[in-house]
Image 1 (cartoon, helix red, strand yellow):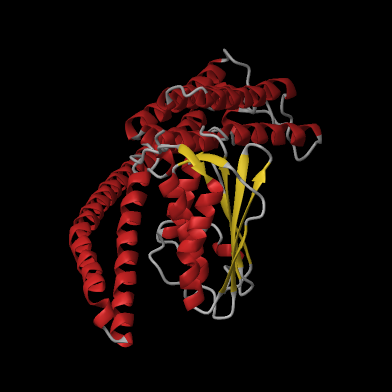
Image 2: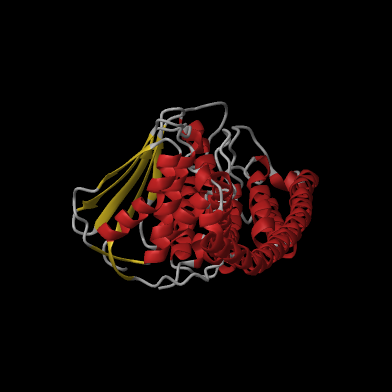
Length: 433
């Protein structure tokens, strides 16, 4: 089964636009709050306001309904651009409707046009945002014209007389003061949005180029590394018996470093494949108890050489788990080697596992080392995101573990305090999903 691309790959533009639209839809909340506040102020007699309750309640309800409909359409995965157009047009019409029932030229509600066009600029671009701004200006002008001609009776909200047909020049100035800033805002924010989008495209291209170059370089390292390690192995087989203790120690160190570097190269390639969604998981029936013991034996000697006590608390049989044996073995190796690396001489590293009901298994790797402060618990799982407290490394081991475990349908997390040791936990489903 293929790993899900969205776990590591950058989100598509449509997904990002959907997230932006989800935030913009809460303009409906702002609109509802504005109308609600005006109604409350009028009902409580604050100032001189007298706002029609029914009509503004309808406006608030319509704004809330548009917000709800937009969120539902997003959940149904309809076109983000179409949803944005529909919702922003609806908001424009609702605001225009509310302008009449909150005093026409006397109301502060036209300021909501600015909020709408700013949202349109980032969701739809400069041209479409300008169209919505022009529509808003036209709607506002129509309301003022109808009130000027008497086709609409003006709602007096300030408890003093205002006769629109006698204030034509004032209405024109009022319209200009709303229409021009609204259209200008659409233009300016549209230009800003286009520049940000171009910058984002360049950054994406640069990131893709960097990733391709990195993968090419790492891939090309495999051949010389394989030759180097092969030569070291031949030296060990042919000359180990003739070497002094010091010479043998140097050779063993070179072999360990070579194997470590090879593992790092493989890890970088596999992290890249996982981030690109190219890693195919091949599940197989794995004797998990045996896998745990093998992983423990692989690092036991290293722990002893570092002066550590290493324990395996594997009293409860796990049985068969359907997973990718090679990848999960590397997860165990990464966690155990990490624990050994950051535990001081005399400390303890513990591997344990138990079943969680019938459907999952829980694995724990604990140490008595330096620990990880809580603020770094999520960061250490990010690529190149190791905790900033003297921990060395490439920052790939733990991201690899997270991607692998999550690709299997499990979870991984940390329980740790600074200078109080660290425990890594991960779960795996027993059956392939």
